[in-house]
Image (cartoon, rainbow, N blue to C red; front, side):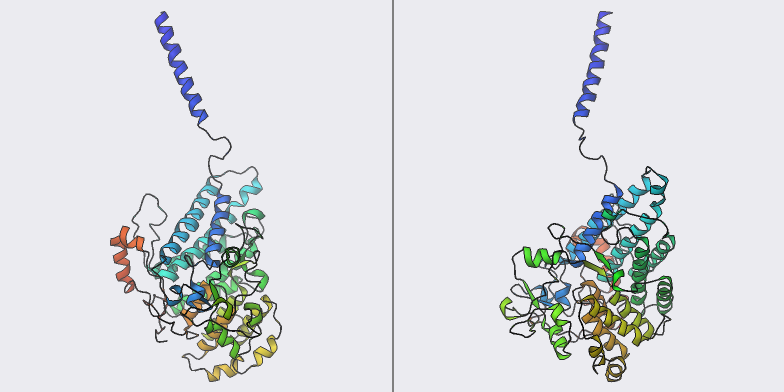
Length: 487
């Protein structure tokens, strides 16, 4: 009997010790799981940073659209995508740091029971907002690469996802976006102010952003599916797109790192002088004596001078970006009102019903750009023969004639917006960019697929590469029908 008691006592003691030891391993200072709201905030910042950054390893679109030129290391200005693994880095940022966080945020919010009925009532709006950013990220991937992993993406147990047809994905994204828009209840709140550094939880503004994104996606399909393009654009316009610069989808940066604007981080705090203004945009704006030059660039001996594209350009001898652009707290623009008005101008030129003609939206777009940069003189600028819509249209040699007129002004208005002017240049084919010194390819109308995909997901990579017509920088994507590579 004594033996039995000793054995039972020892067993109980062992279990007790085991439980106590496990308790000792528990970190009581950190939460057991991350809230969906925290994951959303993280994804939002990662997306904004990736769109805004000029970091040569992450985003070279200011160089590709010839708004900036490198001073010393010129590979990226010459369209080299390989040396710094740029396609791999962008792919990783959007899939891992944006889309996966958004996916997990959605799951965590769905599984959370909040303390009040009012807080639980916010969940559908939160889910809709997450969906809007998810569509934004996926649409960017399609517009940048072509066919992408989609139906099998974000599954950590599937390391070799198949690639889906880009057009099919794009159409599905429009459907998802429409559903998100329709589910938003503007009478209710969503995220708290500190959880949403774009719109501070304002559902009405998120709905305008969603419709503006839908407008852009509809226009992108204009040359591949005119019917769907028109219905998508008109639906977005009717539901309500941006109506002023106050509606801009912008990320709110702070005055100090690590929450400062990436332009400040890379061009000021880094202590590096890697970029000057690009000759292409500077010369074009000089020809028009564009008043926005003072808001965009500094001067050298009173003149605006851009570095030759693809050539080393001494920092001291050329214009730089303005002080405002490298301000730590300058908002990071994800999508802007002037872009929306340029899109509406294009839509009207195509015969879509969007509440005005091409000229009225064109004027509104240029005016919005001047207002955003606090530049005066828009009336005189609009009166210039090269800018006046009717006069410029008559002189245009493009087919159709409005492409050059709208495309050129959109190029100026979307300065410093990275993916927005890149998409505009590819869709409208204007302005015609110059051939960089020692160019490594024709104008890159897409990112090539990541090297990591080629080596680790080879069969699916091969299939996708074949489906789009070859994994080359010059391979035109399904929506990009008319671009020519002749400089």
